[in-house]
Image: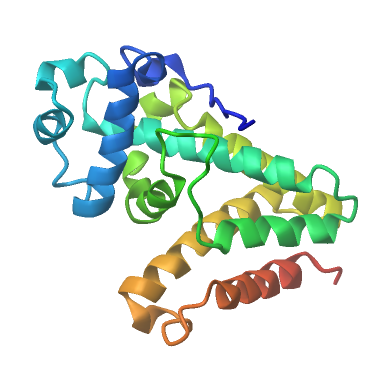
Length: 225
């Protein structure tokens, strides 16, 4: 029997919960496919509506605008990733092994999760890498923050920073290092595939090289001096 994973989302991210209807789930599913294929700038509700056989007004009944939809799927990804980290480190007692597992999860190509039929995590992972910063690099970031749109990302960073402190209780910058690990894993992946002169991994294009780099970066930072 297959388990189904349900991610609880902030109600303010949507006008109508897309998880509760087939149309809503299709909006999420096909918006991920469209943004991955064509990019966020080319993505429109009109085109999405045509592809899934509904009206543009029908899409707007679920999401106020396309930026809110991008924020929704990005927040969904962070919550899903936090679940993966907690699940895979739950029975690990050695904090160093825990942290290495976290780094591997962050730097390894994601595979689609069978527990979430309408979300392709592999595509969503690529969207977060290439489009994710557009969620918070906006003029309304302060207001969005007040509405706790970034809570899933903050909770993910909190989980990782707690593991960092397990490894090195006196380390002064656990949250900064946690966000650095996440963003660096994504940036190095993006550079490796798109701007190869900005990384050392363009020739091999191996996740293992990025993992080794992050391990070196992290454990050099937290080791006792």
